[in-house]
Image (tube, rainbow over all chains, first blue to last red; front, side, top):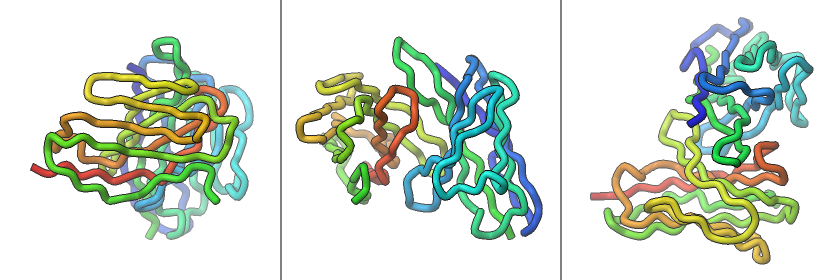
Amino acid sequence: GAVVSQHPSWVICKSGTSVKIECRSLDFQATTMFWYRQFPKQSLMLMATSNEGSKATYEQGVEKDKFLINHASLTLSTLTVTSAHPEDSSFYICSARALSQGQETQYFGPGTRLLVL
Amino acid sequence: QKEVEQDPGPLSVPEGAIVSLNCTYSNSAFQYFMWYRQYSRKGPELLMYTYSSGNKEDGRFTAQVDKSSKYISLFIRDSQPSDSATYLCAMSAGGGNKLTFGTGTQLKVEL
């Protein structure tokens, strides 16, 4: 099956610093990746859609200058949380769109837990 | 009103029980329906994928979609303690495009 990895799995940083999270498709190429955020006991909320070689499409209410997304290759997308604040502490999960058994769907990474002090 | 409604639980059942998990939705454009399983502090894992109405079975899992009622279900037969997780329904208008998730139902299967 399609495997997606994320790095780091968890990170603690000071308020005001920037944090970069990587999302990789390990055994397939993904022209489209998605970034989600999940707060405790809540569902996944889509932040942005990342397309290889073009600008990301952000959901309403998500600040594009704060959450920088780069999808420079078919296997890697990065999310940079700039000037992080405690309210940015959350579980960030990426997914990659893949075709499997004739079905196109999303396969998720293991997530990155961010804690901003 | 949310586009996708799902009872958050928690739902506690004895080992071996049949579990029924459900979601309702309001957007008639949804054509693709998925169930994901998420263990604590992990990413979601795709369990079932269904296009349009009908049933799909995979081992102990059965997914049902009733588009006329805008209602989808996931049944787990012979539930095991290892099935204890949060189950998320998700749907989209176009396959691997933007997914809309339910809030997830927390399931605990007890010995």
